[in-house]
Length: 106
Image (cartoon, rainbow, N blue to C red; front, top):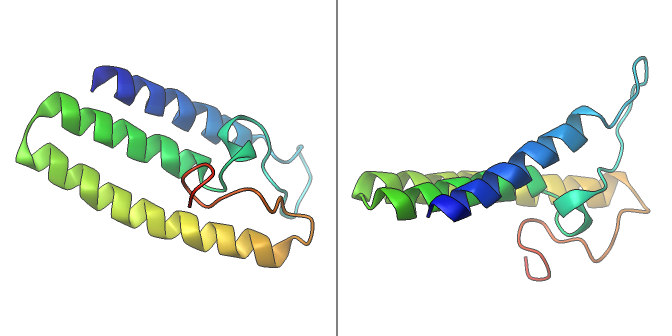
C-alpha cells in the first residue's frame, strides 16, 4: 500500500507540475498537456490522486480508508471523463489514442 501511495504521489506531483507550467507568463488560452502520464490519459493528475488513496486504503486496512478511496475514485473518474470529452471537443488535434483515466482502456 505504501509503495502504491508513493507511485500515485509521484504521478500526481509530476502531473500538477505539467499543468502549472502549460502557459508562459502573459499567455492566455488553453493548451494540451503533454509529458508524463498525460501521454496516455487526459486525467493524469486524477489518476495519480486515485492511486494515492487506493494505496492509503491498502496500507490503512480500515473500512473508512476504503470508503474514502472509493468515493475519491468515483468523483475523480467522473471529472476525468468530463475533461477528456472537453479536450476532444476543444482541440481538433487532440491525441486520439489518449484515454480519459486508465491507460489503454478507459
